[in-house]
Each structure stands twice: as structure tokens, then as C-alpha cells.
Length: 406
Image (cartoon, rainbow, N blue to C red; front, side, top):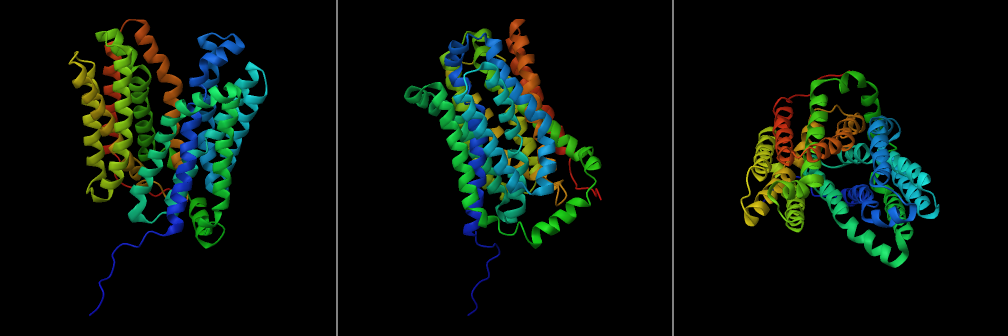
């Protein structure tokens, strides 16, 4: 009797380690976003800063990331994403180590510029490595694990940094963050054999394909511009909900700030759970476009309802949880849709460009939402967050095919 043939290849141990190591780098990138905010009070006291002075290094970080992320993607396609990822991890670690060692506010600002440069590598290099090395049937799961690791990094950073501060002071906390980045870089180097095809035929073939791509034409094409708009609008929604949701609820319905933060925590936790659920569902979904559009619709309507009326504690937490889960479950589909419209050999360039939308939103939209609150328009925070979310549906349903860019 003939044994049945397997239709899917068994997961390779090297592939699994590669997904884990690249996801660990993404963990570091989100961890580094939240090293300074938990230490605001200590840095402010040390350097006698205003709140604007505290915001300067974070703004510099975001601006540098926005300017150099697309070039980082081009570099990843040219010299290889693995080397670029290692360089970014080391740059960030050096920046935070020197921040902890040198007693100067303006030096701190300069080091956040350097850390912003290191931050540019993660999205183009990570997505390029996953796209090149993961089997097709595992791609959705790989993207979901990668995204979840980033969310986890941001989630554990505040507690970890504050705990380190109690042990070694705020400067020591920066050194702890530096050690984390160097440790992940060292782990990647030890596992470089899992990227064994990079110096050989597969990488050369991809480089040849990438060299034939007209990158200017590619980045100005509608599928890529729509993907950039998608990431920008989703980041704008997150800025409204995450950064300004609790204080907008306080101003609008006199919701206690503790309850607003509890609802936000539920939103973030359910978002992380949604990412993992999306990774399980993505291979079973017949239309990624329809699935993503439905999730965005639910997310947009739920956050719109939050700002409509005071429905009480249970409904507030429920709506915020629905928003988080719906926004999280579509993330693997989002990444797959971008990969579908990207020619082989250009993953670094495309993912570097489209995820620059995160940085653009991080620079522009906090000022917009803050101005709304300053002008006593807290309801508009939720309305605009919902509008950005619902408008992003258009960027999903209008992107269908991969064009030729040779």
C-alpha cells in the first residue's frame, strides 16, 4: 500500500530558527521605541527640561527614521538584508550605550538621531529576509509572529525599563537596552548558517532580478503608493487611539484616566491576540482583500462608536477590545498584500518605503490630535481615527495585481 503524499513541506528547523531570530530583532525595534518615555521624569529632573524638551529626541528619532528608511531598503536589496539588519541593531545599541554614559542633553538628542538611523533597517530587512527564506505556506504565520514580537517588545519595555531604573538608575537602564540589542545581534550572527543560501545561487538570482527592476517606476506605481497610504492611515489611527484615547475620553465623557488606560490596555492585548489569530486564519482566507476590508470596517466602526456616546464601562472596554482585535487580525493579510505586489528582488525597497508611513504619521499626527484637544474637540479625535481607518479600506480593495517594472 502506497503511503499518502504530503501536500505541504514539513517546517524546517533552520526556517523556524530564522523566523524566531528575525522576530527577536523586531522585538528590539519596538522595545527601543519605548525606552525614553518611562524615564521622562528622571531625564527631565537631570537636565531641567520642559515637556517640549523631552519631545525633541523622540521627534528627531522619527524624522531621521522617515528620511532614511527607504534608502535603507535600497541598501538591503543591494548588499543583503542580513548585514543591514545586524548594522541597525548595533547602531541602536551603541546610541543607547553612549546616551547612558555621556552627561549631555544635546548629546542625548544626537544619539536619538543615531538610534533613528538604526531603526530604519528593521522593516525592510525583516520583511525581505522572511520573504526570501520562508516557504509560501508558512508566510502568513511568519508575518504574524514577526508582528506579534514587535507588539510584545513595546508591551514589556515600560515595565522592564522602570525595573532597570530602580536597580541601576536611568543611565543604567539605557545600558540595559543596549545590551539587549547587542545580544540579539550576536544571536543572529551565531545563526547566520540559517541564511546559508544568501552568498550563493539564490541570492545571486534575486540580485539579478532586483537589478532589472525600475525602482522609481515601482515606488510611484499605484499598488505601492496605495500600500504607503495604508500604512500611514493605520498609523494615524493608532496615534489617535493609543496616544490620545484616554485623555480624549476624560475630556469628552469624564471617563477616569485609569479606566481609559485599562480600556487601552485591553485594546493592545486584543490587538496582539488578533495578530496571532490572523496568522492562523490567513492561509484559510480565500480573499485577503475582502478579509482585510472587513476587519478595517469593524475596527473603524468600533472606534467611531467609542466617541459617539458614554455607553458605560463594560461597553467601552468591549468596543476598544473589538477595535484592537479587528485591527490586529488583518495585519498578516496586510503584509501578504504588499508582498503580492512586490517584484522579486525588491522586497527591501518596497517594505522600506511603505512602512515609512509609520514614521510620517508619527511626526505629523500627534500634533494634529493634540491641537484638537487644545481646541476642546475631543470627539473629533475618535471621528478622525475612524475616518482614517475606514478610508484605508480603499487602499486595500483597489490593489489587485503585480505589474511589470522591468
